[in-house]
Length: 227
Image (cartoon, rainbow, N blue to C red; front, side, top):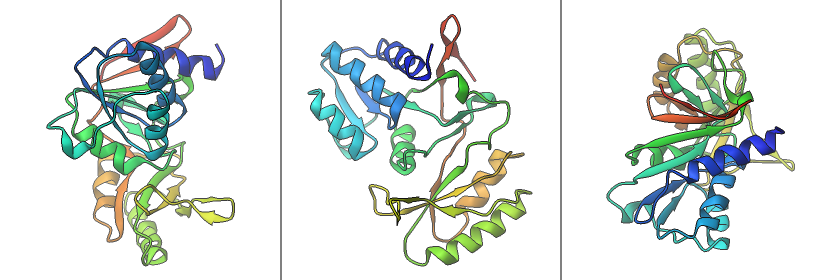
């Protein structure tokens, strides 16, 4: 299967987990978009919480009823893509610059399912540059503190401001994204805690102990993976 066919397969498989009456978290990115399209085809009686303006626009186009996160007590199921899936379903997310809203929705969910093509499965996190969301004010100073934090964790990466069309990428919340090409992350939990302690950091793309299961494309179809 091509990469796009793999994304479609896991997106449609994840849609089978949804039933009428549920509150569903809608992830962001090319793989999550297949899940949203599959939901649109099924015409279920659900309410959905989008993790980005792009996902919200797609859901509206497909006539999926949307609701604000603050309007629900909990989300029954969230399905979202991942940039890397490591041991124990540790994840790197944030390639779509929606990591903060994604993490808020994941934290509010009873069940979280990561979906991905086969190439996203890795033995060690870090080959995909780790996204770190920072406030725009004083971001150059924050970047220097991030370098120190990475060094503390034995990672020699220099975070780079994410740019597009000659301008810094802005999240839906107006923040900036720095990407750290870690190469390998020896201790994801230590790095996660260290990054969160840096003044100016809003959040990071390490999703640890959040995924309950994953659907990953495999030669025989779709593999169901548990932590």
